Image (cartoon, rainbow, N blue to C red; front, top):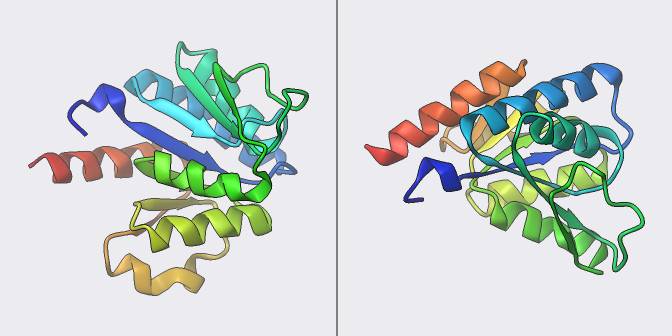
Length: 167
């Protein structure tokens, strides 16, 4: 990571998200754009994906969507760069391995698989408004897992991690 401008933040979460989580995801997307970072998510026009991409794009950010489909029918209008994989759930590996830092909202089995992939691949992971924090406690000791309750806290954690890695 030679430049802060090239940092990719993966935002993972459910397609069927609570309104509060969608509002937080929108703010997170906005803050990612303000930092000059790239937002990466699952690219679909629903839930956390749509809200975070909208927040980033409406604030001048670049958004990348890694879609499980081979066609563009479900691509969010807020995705600058849609990547159609035709890979189904296997695309979760691309989501995680392409991201430098991951923020995970509550979600279903797909989000849980992304959380597990992030931890397995030693990607710093921030659980935002998650009820699964205790499940992954051993990773917190390895400086891989963090918890936040607001978008601003998540951004602060990422900035602290960036500063730590640059020093």
